[in-house]
Length: 276
Ligand SMILES: [Zn+2]
Figure 1 (tube, helix red, strand yellow):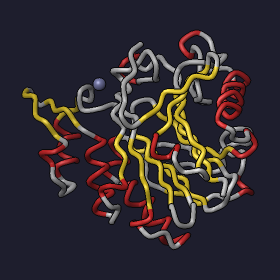
Figure 2 (spheres, rainbow, N blue to C red):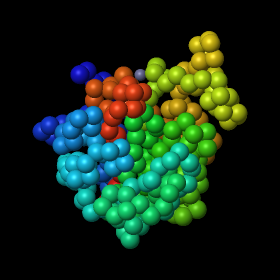
Figure 3 (spheres, protein in one colour):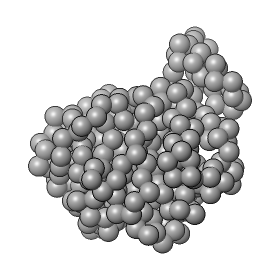
Figure 4 (cartoon, protein in one colour):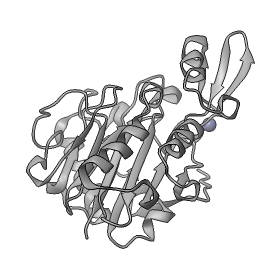
């Protein structure tokens, strides 16, 4: 395995591996990680670090995987709150009373693709396996957010919706936000067809920077660049947007990739918590 990234660290703790953004590692009040495939107890097609409860894996094994990752990054397992993603753009504010939802308490809401909180010790969990993770940190109030931007969520501008909701709920100013995009399937590997391409043309953004025609009605799509442009329209300063240079499909021995595995796979999670 050769891992190269300017923006991300690959950290090993015994057999467990996870990724972090260097920029977020510099913020003493932020704990965060992206899981990999390595260091868990799941078996078969979920071998070994599967963070998805809904793909047929043994629940106790997934729970143990969360406990191992939490232990490695200094987040309490009790603090986790998960989204229930289905490719929409609903962003939910959560607090200490929602801890455990989607992890050790049942999901209580459908259609949550983004989570925000301004409480410390509430750890936001989102799931991925090629789709684009977005993470938000308000460097002034230390409020945080996490969102899941697949192609539908991206077209629905979930990044802008998360910025808007943090402003509405916490008074967050876009210029105080640092936002990370990825790791996700990159433009090297993400082929889409005409109906999807058409949705991206309709966004009214700089299409030639993220949609590349290959012929035969096929396109390579750059979801990271699309999300970057959407965040800029929300007022996030360019220098506050961190782009992952890690492609999930190119690194599918390390990270779960839906396309690389043909869907026989586990999932990875992103966790972010503010401990101010
Ligand atoms: Zn790739």
